[in-house]
Image (cartoon, rainbow over all chains, first blue to last red; front, side):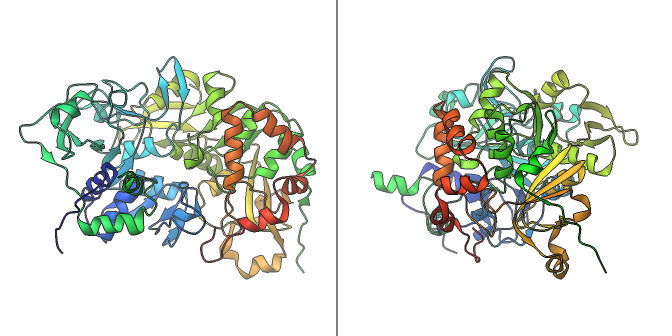
Length: 272
Length: 302
């Protein structure tokens, strides 16, 4: 397998690749549509053919399609269910698999993530004075509570999405620090990685605070910090996020995101 | 000789059995398999003070909230997939026009499961440490408790059982007795149908019971749990119905634009209150030509 890298790529492709590289062969992954799904399927199509993709509405190992009369609109869209190995139900995925402790990686998105990896997908404003409501949990709280490792996909990487403290904890990360998950009785491992268009972040083992791990090769550590609303832990050595290989990019562009909806490649190609 | 009970009613008759203040578990999951025709008739019959419950919010939920039929919403969040947000629900929440008990998706399913099993509550390991839990403890302390397991000592969230007065389920196929075939993933369909005191099935097709007996493994809700059967072809429009038809992108966009611009009332007048029944609605949204354009390809199922 040649490791030749694509010469041009989009931030979305960088994120998809970063997500894919977190998945090991054989992992059980729960994700929703968008970049989490592209990342999971990319792993399955490349280095992790035995990883399993599960979806909360009750779909096991589908091969989602983005053709014939338009693109997929969400987990409720039969385009997402295409060629699945099993149709089951919500409790079977989120209860007997996730709560049972069998899910290795859960991927969630949201409006905000804070330094302890708590995610808000419920409201903007404040807990007591909401200005507007959004999606809420769906399966996100269950995934954050119960998956062994949680990957948060967040973009764009900007100040308002990275506050010191989220306005509402929809999905708990480390809540307010080390030992808090255990104290409130949570089983899962909590936030493990945050993937943005600028960086891949993790969490310090001692403090459970967000730590920079790798950056988009086109930005600097200073830029990432400047667009984060709290002080990041910055190790001496920060890696560069891996650009897509030619093989990975081909899979993204020809199979997983043909219209560029999530990785933006088609739109970028038009723009240049 | 076996007797086939005939539970077939018209939509108008079925909706007449709903009382103001009833708790209805609605059918769909976001933009698929919503019992839209039923929701339209609830709006036409001006039902009020309903409690609506569902795992992931649906178009039917948003429309009922917008039409002023709903007093309380019990759900696990959600949006209309990538089509857009649920404007009516999200605004009613900010303006405190409805009571809301908001959980996670799994917790709603577990609450139905407890109801279905006839037990008063069920423990869960979700919600701990979240503001979802905090808000529920403040606003619905009689519905949720945090406690320690009497066997292991670990922290548990106890969720009060849900027992809706009625579950309305849109199915692909049903017989007159109510044996319902449902295709595609099931979301929380089984649990909510079994938790409810009464079940109403609306369906794309009504078949003979002998057809059901040929393929009983397809039956998701057996007839003995069902009270009423309603024939409602394209009854999920504009949401999708797996193996029968795709969502109607054009109509959903029209709905969302109306909501976003504050013109939901106009939409309601035109497509719901302005028609007498489901058949007129199907003409209104484009008739045979539109409906055939949405028909599912048997290979893809949409």
